[in-house]
Structures are given as C-alpha cells and as structure tokens.
Amino acid sequence: MYKVLKELKVDLGERSYPIIIGQGLLGSFDLTPWVSGSQVMIVTNETVAPIYLEKARACFPGKVVDVVTLPDGEQYKNWQTLNLIFDGLLENRHTRQTTIAALGGGVVGDMAGFAAACYQRGVPFIQLPTTLLSQVDSSVGGKTGINHPLGKNMVGAFHQPQAVLIDTDTLSTLPAREVSAGLAEVIKYGLIRDESFLDWLEQHIDALRDLDAAALGEAIYRSCLCKAEVVSLDEKEGGLRAILNLGHTFGHAIETYAGYGNWLHGEAVGTGMMMAADLSFREGAISQADKDRADRLIQRGGLPERAPEGMTEADFMNLMAVDKKNVDGRLRLVLLRALGDAWVTAGARPDNLRATLTAFIR
Ligand code: NAD
Ligand code: GLY
Image (cartoon, rainbow, N blue to C red):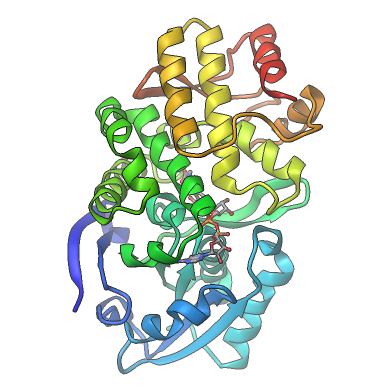
C-alpha cells in the first residue's frame, strides 16, 4: 500500500492542481479522478520504462493505456523526438479527450507536457516525475518545451498539468550524479527565498545524498511549497517567477556550450549559482561569508565548481545573449540581495561580470 506524506496545491484558479508526495504511489495510487476521458498515453523513456512503466499503468485502472517510449537523454529533447509522441497519439487514435502522463525526469516531462500543449490544440496531462530534479522543480509550474541547437528550452509553451504525483521511492534507483543534479535545484530554493531552508540543508545535505527517505520527503515538500507559491503568484513569469532561474543564465550557456547531455542541467545550474553568488558579492550585495556559505553548500551537494574546459568569456557572452529574460538586448541576471532573497537586474557592472566569468573559466 502507498503512503501519502504531504499534499499541496498550486493555486491557479480553475487551473489549480494538487502535488501529491508519498511512498509506494506508483503501482497503487488511483489517478483516474484526474482523467476525464477513457484514453491515457504514458510517455516515458527507455531507461525508466523497464523499472516503472507497469507500476505507472496501474495508476489508471479501467482506462485504455498506450505508451510511447522515447530515447533517453537531453540530446533527444528536440523536434524529432517530440514527433514520436504525436506519431504514437495518432497511430493509436487518441482523441482530444486523451490524457498524457509523463513518466520520467525533466526531459520526458518537458517534452510530454509540450506535446500535450500542442496535440489537437491542447489536451490534459499528468506529471509522474522520477528524478529528484523533476520532483522538486520541472514537474511543477507548467513550463514545457524542447531545446534548439542555438539555445536551451527555446521552444515551448506554458501548460499546467492536472496533477503531479511524486513517488519518492523512485529515487532509490537514481544514479548519484543525478541526485546531485537535483540537489542544485533544491539549494536554489533556499538561496532565492528561504534562508531557514539553507540552515536545514546544511544539516541534512549528507543525508540527502545518502537517499535518506525522511530527509528527501522534507526537501521535496519544502521545494515544491516554494515553487508552488512563486508559480501561483506569477504563472507566466511576468516578474517574480524569474527568480527561479537563479544560476540558469550561466547554466544554460554551459549546457549549450558543452553539448546537450554532457553536463547535466542541475550540474550547470550548480556552477551557475556559484557564479551568481560571486557576482552578487562583487556587486556589494552579499558578504564574502555569505558567498562562501553558498559555495560550500553547492560543493557539498557534489556539483562542479568551474565552467567546462575550454569555455571562454566570449562563449558565455554569446550564449547568454539569447537568454529568455533579456529585454531590448540587455542581459538580465538573477542575483542575490541576501541569502534567501533574489532579484532580477540588468544593472550588473560589466567589469564585475567579466571578473566573475574570468574567475570561473579554466
Ligand atoms: P533527465 O530527465 O534527463 O533524467 C536524468 C536521467 O535519469 C535520465 O537518464 C533518465 O532516464 C534517468 N532516470 C529518470 N528517473 C530515473 C529513476 N527513477 N531511476 C533511474 N534513472 C532514472 O534529467 P532531469 O534532471 O530529471 O531533468 C532535466 C531537464 O529538466 C532539463 O531538460 C531541464 O531543462 C528541464 N527542467 C525543466 C524545468 C521546468 O520548469 N519545466 C525546470 C528545471 C529543469
Ligand atoms: N525552473 C524555472 C521555472 O519553472 O520557472
């Protein structure tokens, strides 16, 4: 039997939805109350399917369940792979009443969600995230999409799920490197909005890396709570939501430079957050002690501390020029005003930005 640990809500009026966090949910939790039609299309990948597909099927008793299994990897988060989902939906004659269920990490979730946003001009979908990163971040908030060779997540749509079902037991099969990548996004919430969460993380980061179930449950709950609050206040990123991108401007540049899949998204965000803390310090917003504290926690999360070999200041500047936050050609960055308090600014001094880039290239 399953155990629900916590349930919370993303409050978006008629598009509100629950985030259900628990153990043993895949295989026994009945998701049919969130499925209006008779058809379900599970979208997963070749790594996750052998472990969790049959359990996911069991969440939809009485429904006609079909499956699309995608190749695994960030390098497949593109148009060609997206089309495999539309092929599967059409070949199996899925109608506008179908529900898509994303079973996997953030790559599967972003692509399945984008397919749901587009198929027959939009069908409902459910998130069944199986990585730490997707459980604390990508499954919540309705950002869906794919990469373009010139920029990360450049093509997509806002499309909120009907429900997010987080089975923390799935983390038992996750490789250690992926756990660390997820921890980057967990640490992000402490840095942008909740200093007390940073205190908690400093005490529990080793337990989290050891997959301690109680610590994971708490970290996932506090992360989802933070994300749900921010998304409820600013669904389409008119302002506040951009703080969820701490470290992502540098990080997306790293991911694109390294070639999708070579650096994990969370790894790039980890280094990117160190860069954001470094620049915040150079701008005089946070103290050396605060910067060191952020660095130490990110390092203890097992995340890389320097940009990829060979990446230059010019590479960063060129790749950051296409960031979605930029306005009228001006680079906008999420920086820290204090630990637990982030803001978006176009006002970082160019010499400080150059100094940060110089400090992190090899
Ligand atoms: P991922 O989806 O590539 O999953 C990581 C790896 O773990 C993959 O090889 C996957 O097959 C495997 N895997 C998944 N679950 C597993 C399990 N339980 N056991 C063993 N292996 C498992 O990567 P990710 O870190 O989950 O997601 C990264 C993606 O999420 C990026 O594309 C990023 O842009 C996106 N993202 C989106 C948002 C958003 O708001 N939509 C937020 C953050 C990140
Ligand atoms: N991961 C950033 C966002 O959801 O806005």
